[in-house]
Length: 296
Image (cartoon, rainbow, N blue to C red; front, side, top):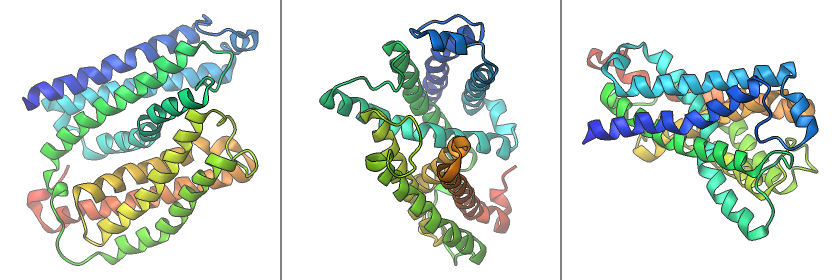
Protein backbone atom coordinates (compact mmCIF):
# COMPACT_ATOMS: atom_id res chain seq x y z
CA UNK A 1 0.00 0.00 0.00
CA UNK A 2 2.82 2.41 0.91
CA UNK A 3 4.43 1.65 -2.42
CA UNK A 4 1.25 2.62 -4.26
CA UNK A 5 0.98 5.86 -2.27
CA UNK A 6 4.62 6.66 -3.13
CA UNK A 7 3.98 6.17 -6.84
CA UNK A 8 0.78 8.23 -6.76
CA UNK A 9 2.58 11.05 -4.93
CA UNK A 10 5.54 10.95 -7.32
CA UNK A 11 3.66 10.93 -10.58
CA UNK A 12 0.97 13.22 -9.20
CA UNK A 13 3.74 15.78 -8.59
CA UNK A 14 5.04 15.37 -12.11
CA UNK A 15 1.60 15.50 -13.74
CA UNK A 16 0.59 18.61 -11.79
CA UNK A 17 3.71 20.44 -12.96
CA UNK A 18 3.66 19.54 -16.66
CA UNK A 19 1.05 22.15 -17.76
CA UNK A 20 3.05 24.92 -16.07
CA UNK A 21 6.30 23.82 -17.71
CA UNK A 22 4.64 23.61 -21.13
CA UNK A 23 3.18 27.11 -20.71
CA UNK A 24 6.55 28.55 -19.69
CA UNK A 25 8.33 26.88 -22.62
CA UNK A 26 5.73 28.37 -24.98
CA UNK A 27 6.35 31.81 -23.49
CA UNK A 28 10.12 31.42 -23.76
CA UNK A 29 9.58 30.77 -27.47
CA UNK A 30 7.72 34.07 -27.66
CA UNK A 31 4.27 32.63 -28.31
CA UNK A 32 1.71 34.82 -26.42
CA UNK A 33 -0.66 32.06 -25.27
CA UNK A 34 -3.14 33.46 -22.75
CA UNK A 35 -1.90 37.03 -23.10
CA UNK A 36 -4.60 39.49 -24.08
CA UNK A 37 -2.69 42.76 -23.69
CA UNK A 38 -0.24 44.16 -26.25
CA UNK A 39 2.21 45.15 -23.51
CA UNK A 40 2.36 41.57 -22.22
CA UNK A 41 3.00 40.21 -25.68
CA UNK A 42 5.92 42.63 -26.10
CA UNK A 43 7.35 41.67 -22.70
CA UNK A 44 7.57 37.96 -23.47
CA UNK A 45 10.94 38.29 -25.20
CA UNK A 46 12.23 40.89 -22.75
CA UNK A 47 15.44 39.59 -21.19
CA UNK A 48 14.16 39.76 -17.60
CA UNK A 49 11.01 37.83 -18.47
CA UNK A 50 12.90 35.20 -20.45
CA UNK A 51 15.35 34.65 -17.59
CA UNK A 52 12.47 34.48 -15.10
CA UNK A 53 10.64 31.91 -17.20
CA UNK A 54 13.76 29.79 -17.61
CA UNK A 55 14.42 29.90 -13.87
CA UNK A 56 10.87 28.80 -13.05
CA UNK A 57 11.18 25.95 -15.55
CA UNK A 58 14.35 24.95 -13.70
CA UNK A 59 12.50 24.97 -10.38
CA UNK A 60 9.91 22.61 -11.81
CA UNK A 61 12.66 20.30 -13.02
CA UNK A 62 14.06 20.26 -9.47
CA UNK A 63 10.59 19.41 -8.10
CA UNK A 64 10.30 16.51 -10.54
CA UNK A 65 13.79 15.26 -9.62
CA UNK A 66 12.90 15.41 -5.92
CA UNK A 67 9.67 13.48 -6.47
CA UNK A 68 11.61 10.72 -8.21
CA UNK A 69 14.31 10.69 -5.52
CA UNK A 70 11.68 10.36 -2.80
CA UNK A 71 10.14 7.39 -4.56
CA UNK A 72 12.96 5.17 -5.78
CA UNK A 73 15.76 3.43 -3.87
CA UNK A 74 18.57 5.46 -5.45
CA UNK A 75 17.19 8.56 -3.78
CA UNK A 76 18.26 7.32 -0.35
CA UNK A 77 21.93 7.40 -1.40
CA UNK A 78 21.83 11.12 -2.20
CA UNK A 79 23.62 13.23 0.47
CA UNK A 80 21.05 14.63 2.86
CA UNK A 81 21.71 18.37 2.25
CA UNK A 82 21.14 17.96 -1.51
CA UNK A 83 17.64 16.73 -0.74
CA UNK A 84 16.74 18.77 2.33
CA UNK A 85 17.71 22.25 1.12
CA UNK A 86 15.59 22.27 -2.06
CA UNK A 87 12.56 20.63 -0.44
CA UNK A 88 12.78 23.06 2.49
CA UNK A 89 12.85 26.08 0.20
CA UNK A 90 10.16 24.52 -1.98
CA UNK A 91 7.96 24.01 1.08
CA UNK A 92 8.31 27.68 1.90
CA UNK A 93 7.33 28.75 -1.61
CA UNK A 94 4.37 26.41 -1.91
CA UNK A 95 2.89 26.52 1.62
CA UNK A 96 1.19 29.96 1.28
CA UNK A 97 -0.28 28.83 -2.04
CA UNK A 98 -1.69 25.49 -0.92
CA UNK A 99 -2.98 26.92 2.38
CA UNK A 100 -4.12 30.31 1.15
CA UNK A 101 -5.21 30.21 -2.48
CA UNK A 102 -8.16 27.77 -2.21
CA UNK A 103 -9.64 29.76 0.68
CA UNK A 104 -8.82 32.99 -1.10
CA UNK A 105 -10.63 31.91 -4.26
CA UNK A 106 -13.74 31.02 -2.24
CA UNK A 107 -13.58 34.43 -0.57
CA UNK A 108 -13.18 36.03 -3.98
CA UNK A 109 -16.38 34.36 -5.12
CA UNK A 110 -18.18 35.98 -2.19
CA UNK A 111 -16.85 39.51 -2.72
CA UNK A 112 -16.88 39.27 -6.52
CA UNK A 113 -14.25 39.99 -9.12
CA UNK A 114 -11.40 37.95 -10.49
CA UNK A 115 -8.79 36.31 -8.24
CA UNK A 116 -6.15 36.93 -10.91
CA UNK A 117 -3.93 39.96 -10.22
CA UNK A 118 -3.34 40.50 -13.94
CA UNK A 119 -6.33 41.70 -15.98
CA UNK A 120 -4.39 41.25 -19.22
CA UNK A 121 -3.90 37.52 -18.71
CA UNK A 122 -6.62 34.98 -19.46
CA UNK A 123 -8.46 33.72 -16.40
CA UNK A 124 -7.59 30.10 -17.11
CA UNK A 125 -3.88 30.89 -16.55
CA UNK A 126 -4.46 31.69 -12.87
CA UNK A 127 -6.58 28.56 -12.42
CA UNK A 128 -4.08 26.31 -14.17
CA UNK A 129 -0.94 27.71 -12.53
CA UNK A 130 -2.18 27.95 -8.94
CA UNK A 131 -4.31 24.84 -9.20
CA UNK A 132 -1.22 22.98 -10.38
CA UNK A 133 0.92 24.43 -7.59
CA UNK A 134 -1.65 23.40 -4.99
CA UNK A 135 -1.85 19.82 -6.26
CA UNK A 136 1.91 19.63 -6.66
CA UNK A 137 2.49 20.83 -3.10
CA UNK A 138 0.19 18.15 -1.69
CA UNK A 139 1.74 15.32 -3.70
CA UNK A 140 5.35 16.44 -3.18
CA UNK A 141 4.92 16.88 0.57
CA UNK A 142 3.33 13.44 0.84
CA UNK A 143 6.26 11.91 -1.03
CA UNK A 144 8.76 13.73 1.20
CA UNK A 145 7.11 12.69 4.47
CA UNK A 146 7.20 9.02 3.44
CA UNK A 147 10.83 9.39 2.37
CA UNK A 148 11.85 11.21 5.56
CA UNK A 149 10.13 8.68 7.82
CA UNK A 150 12.04 5.88 6.15
CA UNK A 151 15.43 7.58 6.02
CA UNK A 152 15.35 9.72 9.18
CA UNK A 153 12.70 8.09 11.29
CA UNK A 154 14.28 9.17 14.57
CA UNK A 155 13.42 12.84 14.00
CA UNK A 156 9.74 11.98 14.40
CA UNK A 157 10.36 10.58 17.88
CA UNK A 158 9.91 12.63 21.03
CA UNK A 159 13.18 14.27 22.08
CA UNK A 160 14.71 13.65 25.49
CA UNK A 161 17.45 15.35 27.42
CA UNK A 162 18.43 18.96 28.01
CA UNK A 163 18.16 21.65 25.37
CA UNK A 164 21.37 22.64 23.63
CA UNK A 165 22.20 26.27 24.45
CA UNK A 166 23.33 27.08 20.91
CA UNK A 167 19.97 25.95 19.56
CA UNK A 168 18.14 28.02 22.17
CA UNK A 169 20.26 31.08 21.44
CA UNK A 170 19.62 30.87 17.69
CA UNK A 171 15.91 30.26 18.20
CA UNK A 172 15.57 33.15 20.67
CA UNK A 173 17.47 35.47 18.36
CA UNK A 174 15.28 34.59 15.37
CA UNK A 175 11.85 34.05 16.92
CA UNK A 176 11.11 37.68 17.82
CA UNK A 177 12.01 39.19 14.41
CA UNK A 178 10.27 36.27 12.67
CA UNK A 179 7.10 36.82 14.70
CA UNK A 180 7.28 40.56 13.94
CA UNK A 181 7.71 39.72 10.25
CA UNK A 182 4.60 37.55 10.45
CA UNK A 183 2.61 40.30 12.15
CA UNK A 184 3.65 42.73 9.41
CA UNK A 185 2.13 40.36 6.85
CA UNK A 186 -1.12 40.38 8.80
CA UNK A 187 -1.09 44.17 8.79
CA UNK A 188 -0.29 44.23 5.06
CA UNK A 189 -3.35 42.06 4.45
CA UNK A 190 -5.63 44.91 5.49
CA UNK A 191 -3.49 48.03 5.02
CA UNK A 192 -0.65 47.09 2.71
CA UNK A 193 -1.41 49.89 0.28
CA UNK A 194 -0.79 52.42 3.05
CA UNK A 195 1.99 50.75 5.03
CA UNK A 196 4.78 49.83 2.59
CA UNK A 197 3.10 46.59 1.54
CA UNK A 198 4.42 44.57 -1.41
CA UNK A 199 3.15 45.59 -4.83
CA UNK A 200 0.47 43.60 -6.64
CA UNK A 201 -1.46 42.17 -3.69
CA UNK A 202 -4.84 43.64 -4.57
CA UNK A 203 -7.37 40.85 -4.95
CA UNK A 204 -9.09 39.06 -2.07
CA UNK A 205 -7.39 35.80 -3.08
CA UNK A 206 -3.94 37.42 -2.96
CA UNK A 207 -4.58 39.11 0.36
CA UNK A 208 -5.74 35.80 1.82
CA UNK A 209 -2.43 34.23 0.79
CA UNK A 210 -0.64 37.19 2.42
CA UNK A 211 -2.62 36.64 5.64
CA UNK A 212 -1.86 32.90 5.61
CA UNK A 213 1.84 33.66 5.15
CA UNK A 214 1.79 35.77 8.30
CA UNK A 215 0.05 33.07 10.33
CA UNK A 216 2.42 30.35 9.10
CA UNK A 217 5.49 32.51 9.83
CA UNK A 218 4.34 33.11 13.41
CA UNK A 219 3.65 29.39 13.74
CA UNK A 220 7.20 28.68 12.58
CA UNK A 221 8.66 30.79 15.38
CA UNK A 222 6.48 28.96 17.91
CA UNK A 223 7.37 25.56 16.45
CA UNK A 224 11.13 26.09 16.49
CA UNK A 225 11.01 27.43 20.05
CA UNK A 226 9.16 24.27 21.05
CA UNK A 227 11.68 22.02 19.27
CA UNK A 228 14.75 23.51 20.92
CA UNK A 229 13.04 23.10 24.28
CA UNK A 230 12.70 19.40 23.51
CA UNK A 231 8.93 19.52 22.99
CA UNK A 232 8.98 17.59 19.76
CA UNK A 233 5.65 16.34 18.48
CA UNK A 234 4.25 15.95 14.99
CA UNK A 235 2.53 19.33 15.40
CA UNK A 236 5.61 21.26 16.55
CA UNK A 237 7.81 19.55 13.96
CA UNK A 238 5.37 20.50 11.19
CA UNK A 239 5.04 24.08 12.43
CA UNK A 240 8.80 24.48 12.63
CA UNK A 241 9.52 23.01 9.20
CA UNK A 242 6.77 24.78 7.28
CA UNK A 243 6.97 28.04 9.22
CA UNK A 244 10.73 28.49 9.07
CA UNK A 245 10.76 27.57 5.37
CA UNK A 246 7.96 30.05 4.62
CA UNK A 247 9.73 32.80 6.55
CA UNK A 248 12.91 32.28 4.54
CA UNK A 249 11.30 31.71 1.14
CA UNK A 250 8.87 34.63 1.35
CA UNK A 251 11.73 36.91 2.34
CA UNK A 252 13.88 35.63 -0.49
CA UNK A 253 11.03 36.12 -2.96
CA UNK A 254 10.52 39.74 -1.94
CA UNK A 255 14.03 41.10 -1.42
CA UNK A 256 14.00 42.93 -4.75
CA UNK A 257 11.04 45.06 -3.66
CA UNK A 258 13.31 47.94 -2.74
CA UNK A 259 12.97 50.58 -0.01
CA UNK A 260 11.52 49.76 3.38
CA UNK A 261 9.58 46.81 1.97
CA UNK A 262 12.78 45.25 0.65
CA UNK A 263 14.48 45.66 4.03
CA UNK A 264 11.55 43.94 5.74
CA UNK A 265 11.83 40.99 3.37
CA UNK A 266 15.60 40.81 3.91
CA UNK A 267 15.07 40.69 7.68
CA UNK A 268 12.47 37.95 7.20
CA UNK A 269 14.82 35.91 5.04
CA UNK A 270 17.56 36.11 7.68
CA UNK A 271 15.16 35.25 10.50
CA UNK A 272 13.89 32.25 8.53
CA UNK A 273 17.43 31.04 7.90
CA UNK A 274 18.30 31.25 11.61
CA UNK A 275 15.09 29.44 12.55
CA UNK A 276 15.96 26.73 10.04
CA UNK A 277 19.49 26.32 11.40
CA UNK A 278 18.20 26.11 14.99
CA UNK A 279 15.65 23.49 13.98
CA UNK A 280 18.20 21.51 11.99
CA UNK A 281 20.62 21.42 14.92
CA UNK A 282 17.84 20.10 17.10
CA UNK A 283 16.90 17.37 14.64
CA UNK A 284 20.55 16.44 14.06
CA UNK A 285 21.40 16.23 17.76
CA UNK A 286 20.68 12.48 18.08
CA UNK A 287 23.13 11.91 15.22
CA UNK A 288 25.89 13.47 17.30
CA UNK A 289 25.31 11.28 20.34
CA UNK A 290 24.20 8.02 18.76
CA UNK A 291 25.97 6.60 15.71
CA UNK A 292 22.91 4.50 14.91
CA UNK A 293 21.25 7.73 13.81
CA UNK A 294 24.09 8.91 11.61
CA UNK A 295 22.72 10.61 8.50
CA UNK A 296 24.80 10.92 5.38
